[in-house]
Length: 167
Ligand code: HEM
Image 1 (cartoon, rainbow, N blue to C red):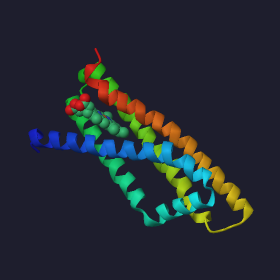
Image 2: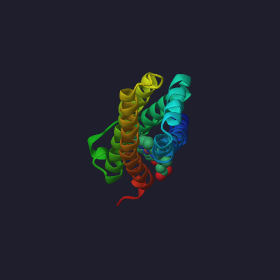
Image 3: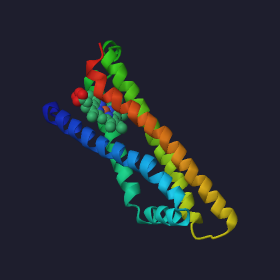
Image 4: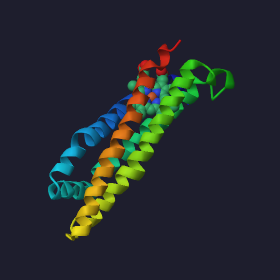
């Protein structure tokens, strides 16, 4: 494939989908999660509806997968197919650390936050006091793990923004 076309396409997809992914993750974890805890059953209903509609799930899946795959493609090109001498440059190390951090954020988002949302949706209409306590604990986990995931995301963004400028 002609790299003069593939590289700019991959880079554009990477930046656009990465911005959408990070922006959505920030909004959900930092701005929305505390409100969903405050409003108790109404927050549970919102989570159950989001899980049932599946749009958020597909959006996060497509945005994260496209960002990660295009990122590793850019990294592959930048390092001439992972050549040891190019892998040792400070630029490559910074982009690699940022990339690994994004993978960690993605795993936390899918395996911890996404799974907690699905479990909340499953219990949402149970109505028993035990389920309500369990749901609130799951919401607290979503919020706390969300904050950790955002720390990884911000580290990724710093690496992406500064990668070309490290000495
Ligand atoms: C949350 C996830 C990510 C976001 C938001 C993101 C964002 C960005 C942005 C905005 C740039 C442009 C930087 C500039 O022009 O100076 C960039 C470049 C780059 N990213 Fe990412 N990125 C993410 C994940 C990844 C991953 C997983 C990798 C894999 C190693 C990666 C590898 C790269 C590389 C190699 C470049 C340089 C491309 C070039 O200069 O042509 N990124 N990224």
